[in-house]
Each structure stands twice: as C-alpha cells, then as structure tokens.
Amino acid sequence: MSNDDNKDPSNAGPAAAYVPPKVWVWDQENGGQFASINRPIAGATHEKALPLGRHPLQLYSMGTPNGIKVTVMLEELLALGHAQAEYDAWMIRIGQGDQFSSGFVAANPNSKIPVLVDHSVSPPQRVFESGAILLYLAEKFGALLPSNRAERTECLSWLFWQMGSAPYLGGGFGHFYVYAPEKFEYAINRFSMEAKRQLDVLDQRLAQSPYLAGESYSIADIAVWPWYGALALGQLYGNAAEFLQTQSYAHVQRWAQQIATRPAVRRGRMVNRSWGELSEQLHERHEASDFENKTQDKVVAGG
Image 1 (cartoon, rainbow, N blue to C red):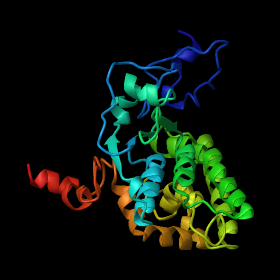
Image 2 (cartoon, rainbow, N blue to C red):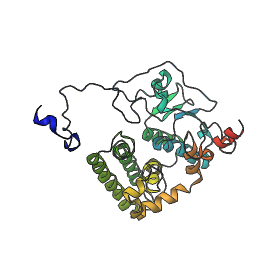
Image 3 (cartoon, one colour):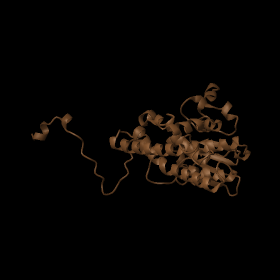
Image 4 (tube, helix red, strand yellow):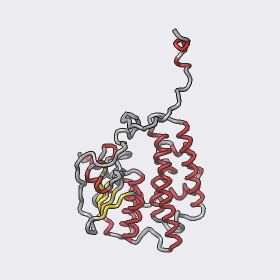
C-alpha cells in the first residue's frame, strides 16, 4: 500500500484546478437551472406556428426584465393615447423551450424573448432584441424619444449602455449568485464588483438629472429600470439588494421608486408573468380589461 493510500480523503486539500481542453465539447449534463435549454447551435427544435391575435402588434415574450421593457413601453404608449399601440401578448415559456419553435425562430433567429411582429405594415415587420423594439415603437408613434438632438443622443447612449451592461448583471452576477449549480467565489466577486460599478455609474448620472436622458422620461429609463430599478428595489435575484447594498445608491433609489409608481409600469410588469403573487400575473394580454378580469388569481378562482 502506498503512502497516498493511507491519507485521509477529508484532508486531501483543494481539488485540482480545471484545465480547459484543446477542443471544447458540449456536455449536456453541465448542470445549472437552464442546462436543459442551453445548447451551442441555433435553429428550431420543433414545428409550431406562433399564435395570432386581432391587434396589429403581436408580442411573444415572458415577464423577465427584457420582456418587461416592451410591455411597459406598450402600456406607456396606450396611456399617452396611442390607440394603435393595442397589442396581443403571448406567453413564451422559455423554460419549456417555446423559443425554439419554428414560428418563433422565423421571428427571431436568435431564439430569445421578446419578439414583436407588426402586422400594420406589409409584409409584417419582425423586430427582435428589446432595445430595437423600444426604438422601433418610439419612432413609430413619435413618443418617449426626445426630439432635441442632444437629448435624443443622450437617450440612445443610455439605451445602448443598458444593452451592453446588463449581460454582466444578468448572465454574470445573477447567474453565478443564483442559478449556477455551485457557488464560485471568484465569479461572484468578479460580477458583484461590476454590478456595483454599474449602479454607481447610474447613481452619478441620476444625481445630475431626474431621468437618464435629462428632464424627461424616455425609452432609456424603460430599458434600464426592469434590470437596475428592480435590483435596487429588491425585486431581482432574491436578497441581491442586501448583498449589493443597493440602498446606498440614493439617486438610483429615488429614480427606481418614482418609476415603479407609474400605472403603465405596474401593468407592464404583470404581462406574461408566471411567478409571484397570482394577482400580479397576467399570462396573456389581449385587451386592457384583461388586467381586471384575467389575472391568474381570477383564472384560478373561476376554475
């Protein structure tokens, strides 16, 4: 028997460091909450057409931060009196792979929510990527995008800041803090530092103006709030607000709370939501009265 055979396994020390192979091979058993739907190839996995409602604007989404951006935008447009912004919102259950249907892939080859299809034009116009959808709707209806050149440029700068920054918050911090099968100190520390840096960027900007583009609420705020506003208010990633001490960002707190009270924001957060309080879940939205009549608590109560 060798000396190694006599060693107590409990005192064996840290496991050997991972060394990447020369060629990466997809391991379908890599664990994690989203392991069943993540894959290194694109395209449809099954044939299924997208449903079609009666309104020109058809939204295929889920109530994640990226999905909330678009439903808030549509509800804000309706609140401003743009009747042509009426829409049908269909639930895409990403955990079940709905985003890999042939119909969804035709609308978004990247298989990510949200997707908007505008049937008011011929041929129907698909729009994917949440930032692109916000910009498309703002230009279509002439709303929530400043007309002044300097403010418009500031608005678009913050819109694209969000598109570039949120993956570090979601795919970085959120993934390793909540969803990864194991807790990795290095990864959590790395992305916590970046999340706090981003909150500080926002805090310093919001110390200068009430909204991100300046004096007026815009698509920049609509894009950023579902991620960073929700995080600041303790609505994202469990106890992440305490972990990151988001209360210390006073200007972000002011902005986040102010936007959270907007009726259109409250409605937008409910659409395509399938978790939380039943009264705050509206799985599908086809008309304004659905907020009163078809929230999940009423659906369950009605059998």
